[in-house]
Every structure is written in C-alpha cells, then in structure tokens.
Amino acid sequence: MRSAAARSLRRAFKGCSSADELATLVAGLSEEDLSFLLGDWQIWARDDQLPPVLTPLGAEWRVWVILGGRGAGKTRAGAEWVRAKALGIAPVASQPAARIALVGETIGDVRRVMVEGVSGLLAVHNDHERPRFEASKGQVVWPNGAVAEIFSAESPDGLRGPQFTAAWCDELCKWRNAEATWDMLQFALRLGEVPQAVVTTTPRPLPLLKSILADAATVVTRAATSDNADNLAPSFVVEMQRRYQGSLLGRQELDGEIIENFAGGLWRRDWIEDQRIDEAPELKTIVVAVDPPVTATAQSDACGIVVAGRGEDGRVYVIDDRTLQGREPNVWARAARAAYRDHNADRVVAEVNQGGDLVVTVLKQIDAAMPVRTVRATRGKWLRAEPVAALYAEGRVVHVGRFNELEEQLCAFGTDGRVGGRSPDRLDALVWAVTDLLIDPPPPLRPPPRPWIRRL
Image (cartoon, rainbow, N blue to C red; front, side, top):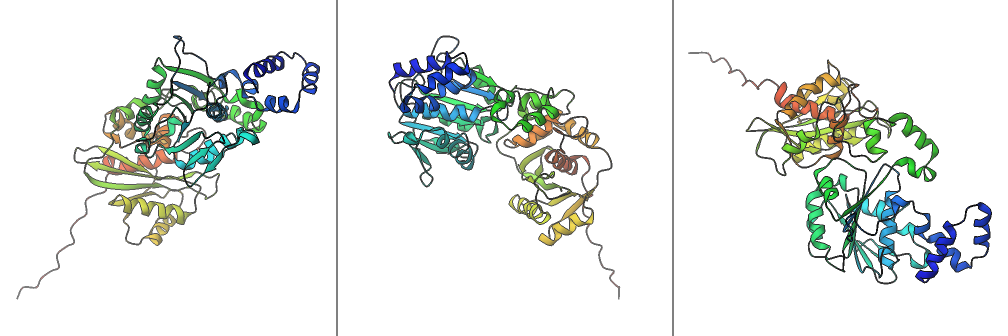
C-alpha cells in the first residue's frame, strides 16, 4: 500500500469514536485494505511501543531503549521495529535495511524469544512477507533479500567482522559479557546513513545501561506490566499485583524502574560493582557450596551451587554460579561434582539442615572420593548473611565476571530472609562458601600419627 493511502487509512481508523463508526469503516474496506489494517503496527501499538523520530535535542537517535516490566510488550515492539526496518516501512524506514543484527543473552534465547517466540519475528509478519529462519546459518532471511544474523552475548568476538544497518538487543541487563558485546556491536553498526539499535530490557542498575541512557543519542520509552494487561492472563496480573505491588522488587520487575538498592537490604550494588574483575588471581583454596532444595519439582526452591576461592591476598573470589531449579537429588549432585572437577576445588560445602545425612549420601554416591564438609544453620538467614555482607562492604569479596541472578538476590534480600517471597538459594550457597573460606574455615588437617617403633 502506498504511504499516502496508508496514512489516510490510519487516520480514519483512529478517528472512529464509536463501535458503529468502526464497523462502518471496516465494512467498506477492500480485502487488501483490511489486511493492511490488521497488520499495521502503527495503529495497534501503544505510544510507548513506537520509536520517537528525533532525540530531545532534535537530532536523529542512534539507540532506542525500551525499559519495561515483565510482559509489558517489549519483545513485540522490538520485533515490529525490525520488521519495519527489514521491509522499509515508513515512518521507521525509508528503504529496507539489508543487514540486521539480533543479539541476546544466548543463541538459544535469540531463537526461542526473538525469532520463534509468541511475539518474535516469525509471528509478527503477514504471510506474504514472513521471513524464513535458517537455523543452520544462524540467520533470518526476508523475501526482499534483507538478512538478520543472530549473535550471543556469551561470544562478543562473534560481532567482529560483520557490519549492519540496524540491531535489536534483547534483555541487555542479563548479558554476561554486556560491556564487551555492546562495544563490538557499536563498531559493527556502520552501514546506512544513521545506523540504529533498539534495546528491549527489564532494567537493572548496571553501569552499561546507565551510560547508554545518559548518551545524548539515546531515546527512552517506558512501560509497565499493567500497560499490557489486555494481552496477559488476568490471573497473572492480579497475582503479581497482590504479591509485589508497591515493593521495590515490583517497581523493578513490573513497573520497569531502575532501583539502585533495596531499602533496608544488607548488600549494596556498588559494593559488587566496585570490586568486580574479569579474571581471578591464583587461588589457595576453592570450594563448591551447595544449598539443596527440600523437594524436586518445577515449583520447588532451586539448588544453590556457588563456587568461590580464597586468594593469596586473603580475599574471596566468586568464580561461578551453577544453581539449578527444581532438580532431582542425583541431578544437582552431579552438577556439584561437575563444578568441583571443572574448578579443581578442594572440597564441597553442603548444608544438611533439610536433607541431613541423605545430602552427603547422594553426593558420595556420585563421587565417593569427593571431600564433603557438612554445615548446619543454627541462626536465621539474615544473621548468617550479615558478616558476609560486611566483608563485601570492606572490599574482601570479589565477583569474577557477572552473575546477574545471584547479584539480584543479594541486592533484593529482605529482613524476612527471602527474595520476592522465595528462598534465596544462590545467596544461601554464597554465604556458606564465604563463611567456609574466611569466617569459619575448617581446622587444618593433622598429619597421621607416626607408628610406635620398638627399640631393640
């Protein structure tokens, strides 16, 4: 459809003030016009799902950040923007963008959410314009020849070499190598008159996100989960509001606000950020801490598995998070053994409050030679966590890399010993690891007694 005709139809549709007027308009449309109307995102989108034309300073923007709560319609907005870019749909694009980058936390996330998801690229196109996904080549190809390549934030160097006109970055705040991936993408956005990127993410107070938002070439729109209530299960909206409405976690995850620190929390995010490094020094002792779940269903608590080591400088370095959700005992025990072997650890530290001797039995069945130290909680989670948080404040605990889920639990840990109504299993495992390495280390092994030698 020509641009002028499209604009005229949009105005007519939006000008309908009653259901009768709308019915009259639709009844008089041709099949082609009706198909266009149903597929025109400019009509159905909320204002926060449409990109501004210019920045507040009057220049063309380079980055559009959509900050939104869970289920707020971020993915649909990102997919529709890529569709408009690939097909050259005004006002988003004046001509098709030949090369587009799709970047997610992992390749699996890009495929599952951005490409094949309910609101992904394959779902938002009409039949005659729908692209095909070539999984073996890692690309989405449109009938007009436009191509979108998929990339993972786990491999920033994958963005070395290719070049693009546009990019869609999903859940940037979950990326493990966020800074490096973002930097490589900026070098690759070098085609067309004004290369642009859209970022769709639930916000977290990360330095990278803050720097992007502060850039004069960035435009920002915000959306809450409730804004998209018509497209969500009513019970979901009601339950989320019941549990989290007004809480700091709810403001972040539902309202899309950037929350620096949770009031009354033990941890502060700057304690973690200020000490973060990319590579650990040589470690004297390495432990794998395990906080087993009581049950093994999908709804049960996770099995916290955190790996940490003590360096020559007397500091603890957190080097891995292998936490599993709702797994059978033999599964998490194998995961603990894998972490033990992968990091050449000295021992496994396992809490036995819930499972007792069964926890050790399960671990020993997997690897009888694996040394296991059992620990038992005699105080509440808050009291156990306080001395560990104090070590963070003193700069004596360092995160090697980024552990988003673990760090979210640390910064959202409440006085009730829970995070969002659930047990903080990653945090529990971390507390046991740091306690074992710095606060209450096991006694040194004594050499075996020498046998008595009879003198002649």
